[in-house]
Picture 1 (cartoon, rainbow, N blue to C red):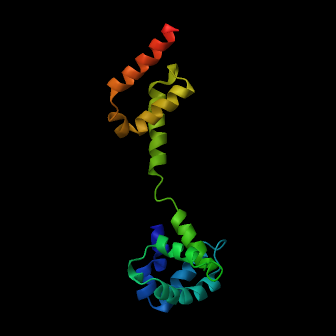
Picture 2 (picture 1 turned 90 degrees about the vertical axis):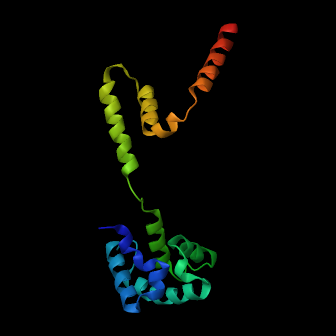
Length: 160
């Protein structure tokens, strides 16, 4: 299940349009899922007041993002009034969107390591992994400049 659905009630459109009972049910469900971080009864009571606070502070509440709401809590020093909502926003905004890049890194590392296993040290393996992972950026490198720079470095060492 998509994690963002659990936090949907904290989005501005939901805060403004959902019935109070819907908001409290969603808040209760979220608090059960994150029971070590959130208190269900407090979150349910905070949500009603927070809804009115958002409508009063933000002129165009329907278009505000969760980051805008979290920033509003910080700007107006509302974290003491809404500690559970503040914590919920922080959890939501710090959840990783995906771990695909990490998985790709290990996949590439495995391919490189298997292919060149016998003749490779750790530094070379790391460098090849980075090149493989960042292949789009590596394709944009002008190799003539790199070669000229490398030749200039070697020429200085020989002249000394």
